[in-house]
Length: 580
Image (spheres, one colour):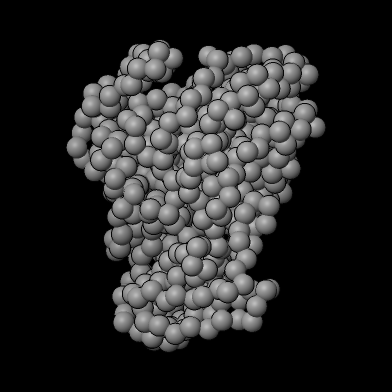
């Protein structure tokens, strides 16, 4: 294996790691970043350690080279973190200190000064803990214990596998998103929900708090005078926008928001955007953006980095991926089986990139003969596969099914305010799938303002808004139906670039040896299979994929993001032809 670096690897300052405010939708001035050097130890017993092995750079996982550890956490092991809290973190009358974790994979226990304050299960979602009552006037010790079962259990894991290879990648563990603190009043805002009522030209805002208090909302725009509205926590406040400025990838306009409740003040933003399925003039269901037909041309985005694994090395790296795809003419990214740090979605919001958000898959090991080989054959023969064979799909445990639904709810609530997200993808290729019609109904109850891709690829049960097709091998045959039709994975064409790959072994669906040949193969598929099918009902495409990931060298970019493997002019021209 060759350890690849990105252009940002050497720029990492151990004293200033990912310092940007990690939650742009709910910003406060009292921000204390806890990223940086912590102590760590990997142990085989669950008792609080007396000694630590060395230093780890948070928020990079111990498996990631940027962490400085380079060691795989095993399911039977315990990963312990320790650091002292900054001196300004101490008891203050009338105030509360909130400790926030962007994500910890998979199970975490949080201690402050030896007291257990929080237990959290779920490796992809944020959590917070009020540490005020455990704080002392002088020194305060923070300890976090982590367990990660990876693919040895039914917990959500995405594309991670302890025995990585092919389309499955290095398992990572522990703290992998920013850790930070904030000082808030005793009575403070906990959440803001923004709902664009597009056709009514109204921005609906709901402020949530444990306290029943009056609130003041200010909405700022370049197109109008600031609008102020008053309300009460827990109730919706409707703000008319007579000169509404729509959000789209071509014009990603954001309204700034300020909310006050007593002594608490937070900053946020929102956008006016509508996504729907409507019939065009020929009666074919199409995706509509802001009441206009809109062809979505996207790329599968796994969100892996050679130096940070799940964690991008810096904010600039996230922006690079989004801007590079946008410059190629793509207007959508399918975030595949991973939930990113919230700043990634913020950049999609402000730069103008639509997002299809996958739920993170879990379950016991999948039966490849059932979820891959048989399912692919059935898809070719247009035979629908039922998702009731729970053992073959890795979903025999009821607890695992309940955990998936719980995390789906939390994912949708966590990301709800991001205007860039237009589609929820519930299941992918049968991986951990179960009772899709029931789960789809639950998702629709949570959010009926976005589209739902019930089952991307195969094992689709006819629900949701999208007929979701994966096609890597066969001629594409599109025929209109009651749902909109999307080619949600295709391509997977591989080109291994010497000096820019990690492994000698390569994985892909069609192997090329030159940039010109790869570009021609991509162009041939788009011109032969995609463009002629748009008039027949095809309304969105997702090419596999944005970048190489370990052995899987089918990215448009190399894994280190240094080489664009296709002719950029050809890709832009083809994207320009994919319109409704």
